[in-house]
Amino acid sequence: MSVPYVGMFTADCQNYRWSKFKNLGSAEEMYQIVLSGVFPFIKNLHQDGDSAYAKYMSDAIFKIPTPAMLSKIVDGIDALDLSEADSKGDLYEYLLNKVSTSGTNGQFRTPRHIIRMMVALMKPTPSDLIVDPAMGSAGFLVEAQAYLRENHADLFLNAGLREHFNNNMFTGFDMDRTMLRIGAMNMILHGVDNPNISYQDSLSEVNTDREKYTLVLANPPFKGSLDYEGVAADLLKVTKTKKTELLFLALFLRTLKIGGRAAVIVPDGVMFGSSNAHKEIRKEIIDNNRLEGIISMPSGVFKPYAGVSTAILLFTKTGSGGTDKVWFYDMKADGYSLDDKRQPIEANDIADIIERYNNRESEINRTRKDQSFLVPVEDIISNDYDLSINKYKEVEYEEVVYSHPTVILERINMLEEEIQQGLVKLGKMLEG
Image (cartoon, rainbow, N blue to C red; front, top):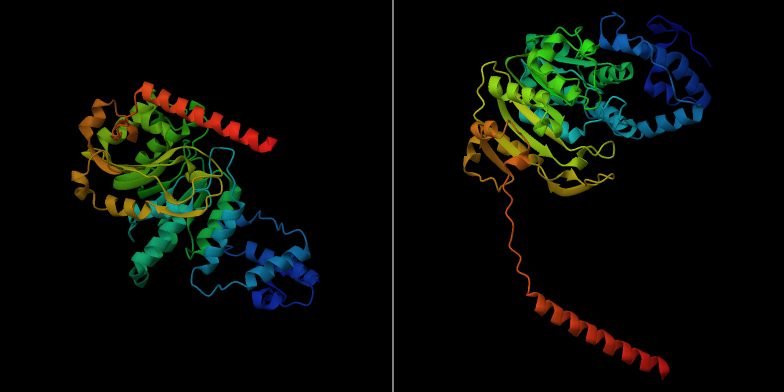
């Protein structure tokens, strides 16, 4: 059974409702309704041509292979309780979690609890302009809007702020059209009507954003080297390099307004790399802006997709310096095992990280033997702008006292004698 599709409407739109097609008599009939009616209807929503949804759904393909598979999916979803306001978005996020794999350009899915922590550290406000220049599935933007709904629900009572939330607040760029489609759908399912999601190479001259945003949330690609010709000239002036992780840091500084802040994930090498480019970008952040904090994360955080050691950089663009004391935190646990299985465990530093970062003035009396501590900027400068936590953390070793070698040898001889006596007894038992 095929239902004709006409523009944005159908011969019988009522048949496209979930409550209708899920109860059709046969799987084949349901499949034809969804393939020829429901899916084209969804693809052609928002046909003003300007929305991210319209741009990136236009080339979407229906990939459920058989009527039986579709019927099984519909039955499974229908059995779920989707009565909560954000439950459909949660379902979409769950599906993304199951299909995500690491990409070819060094990108991989950021765990949702890590994103949530970073958003909580930054505390988005209703007036913010938020960007993720390497957005992937738009996880950072989705979590930012969730934070605002939970902590600033009154913004929706103000027409201007509501308009800002739905049309101007959230911006995301990516170079993968599939991710753009996924990200646009993710934002719409979470209640953001018209996010600014675009296909763009954020590091190229095409990206002209300067001092535009008040908050950057990102986990940019770590892998790969770019040709100088493909990188915006003003980024190379900050740090002459082909490494994407360093160029993205320069980009964040360029796109932020004065007073804008950033929470971004970088590979550990950014913290201690000895090349001129590594030192230049660290020096730029510390000397000409305000480095607030560094959270060192264990290498298992991104498993099973990657086993890289990473850190979260927290800084504010000032354009005139201001780094005084830098807060370091040595994260040891994130609530999940650090192997490929990533099973939930009790140990979890995230709540402590958020609490301590928001009360950094209370950290002044902590020592470098503690899990978090403050380091004066003078110490960092004297260490050639090295930002690795191990450079500053003091490890307390317990003295272990061993017996004198003659005593140890005597014990070994006594054990050897006992073994020989035991063997003699065993031999007699076997003979008897």
